Length: 206
Image (cartoon, rainbow, N blue to C red; front, side):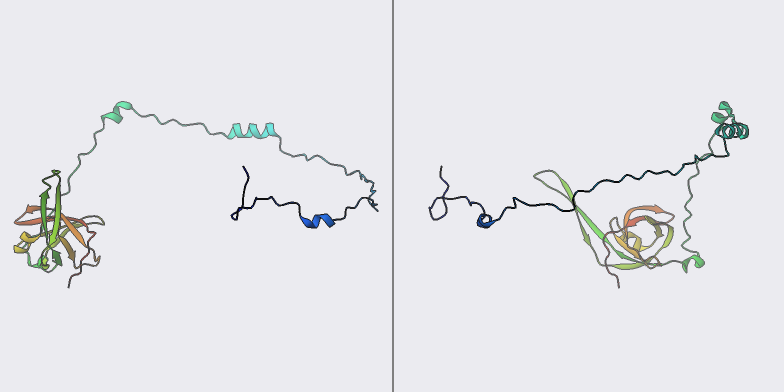
């Protein structure tokens, strides 16, 4: 099958470079100063072997002589298994007294964005999903019972405690300046003990 160009003419491969036609080849030439003879210089330096004053046999003997005797610590298996671990003591959470006047001055102010969770079920697939809607924000006073980098517990009472539901976002006016999401609530000592974790939603409070 003949290869053709776009215009329909036969495609021809390129031939040799035209500049090679005028190239001159050197056939008769002479080399000058290329008949070298190798010169071998013998090394007559005397090599003195290194002699160490330390002998291997003596050194190994000194190590064996100074090797400390191994000491074996024996333990009675019966005594080891006979020991009983001390019973674990659950930490006792001491809730503050709402009528204590000194502790009332230590109650920080909390901002709260109450959450309203609506759970719905898909009639076609039977799947249950939840939607979160936030109500108007408000402030309240509460005692900080326990706090760490990943959890917060606070206790409060009164009408404000009834508005704080699971999923609500709170912002205590403390030095940490962190937002928390309520995950559980438990009735304790005439009030409510709330547990919260860091919140990924951080609304602005006035």
